[in-house]
Length: 314
Image: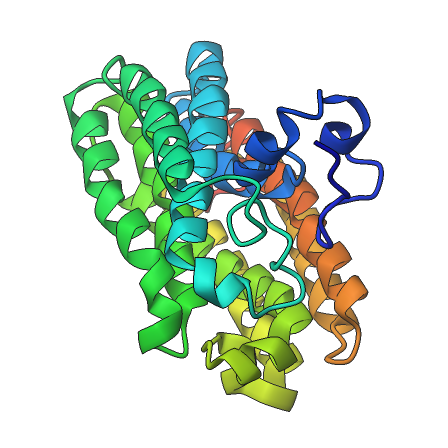
């Protein structure tokens, strides 16, 4: 079976270049040809782990970082499969999504369900090693995941629901590391919600015309020409909440330099947004991997505390 790269995948992505032809539709169903989404689901979990470690003066737990990397890749694949199952009729009407495996007929509905179940079962085996609080949070996240594909039908703000869903890992990572949930983790979660609201509003610029024709709602359609201003507001709130999480967690001053870079990265994205430039929107969206890594680095660096230098931290 020969398949071309999907419109929102890099032309040189590893799936289309190296994967056996028979596996490509399955890998594309799980979005492994578009790894930005894996990073964006993974990084809040890593950030929660880093925050928990820094609050105890420790490096992030390496075992948890590895488990979250594997689990995030699988759960993102399962979530994308579910999204494509629910949206198969909409996807067939949108140019960017019409060639996805389900609407194009490369994978049947029954096969897609089997893929979803398989990825979910392996993820569950990872989840049960993380402790009771983390297990409860992981099970609760399924409600967010299950509801997300329907949000674009009932609200102009499906990107906000995606924020609730994608950043659940901040709570899960913190709970896996500490066995509890605390205010700093909640503030980090809130920061992530606005971060996602910003970058997914940028992402939806690509589909604004097709979404209007198909009757799909989005924050981008709701904001219209005010989208760049909206993105800036979302990113400012994300940055302020991240600083507040670090302050509440008593992190040290070495949190500040990479956190400032995180804020600069977000502000440059907001300044660059153009409503008539879909390819630019995709590049800005993908750049959020680097933004998330900067915040992860900031949280990890916050383990060093020097009260006399920055009395507000630590």
